[in-house]
Image (cartoon, rainbow, N blue to C red; front, side):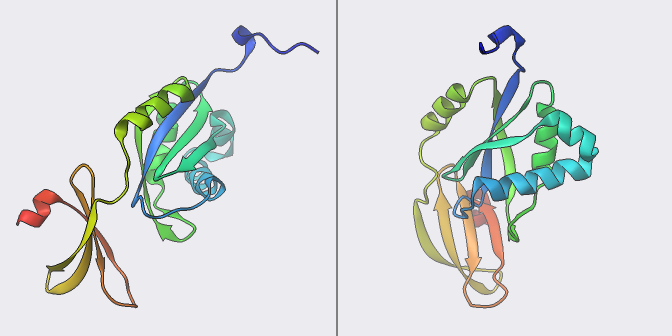
Length: 161
């Protein structure tokens, strides 16, 4: 049997998304389940079937999500509604949409590493925190202690106050 010619294949779109905080790691399957739950609650089962989402890659604090053409707006809305993956608080932010994974990977390679620049001890709101600084001016604060860990997500402007 011959493969389908490109003109008869279904068109796909790929969405590059950033996962905040980037230090949290989980599998693509777990991210897919969170996205599927979000899309199903927003658009129902028939909408989910039309979108056909799939997590192609999930590494280094970034994910590439595939969907059918003309449904990328719905997927971006669904990504904004994701707030937990495997009972870990996380935010999924869409960065770019493209017709090929190759262009997204090039864009990702040009962005540089998302690894932390360094850690410092901080005193904020009368409590002791560990500050982790990332490229782009992002600083995450993690409360020291064993119970009730509460992450705060700040920028360098917030620390100047």
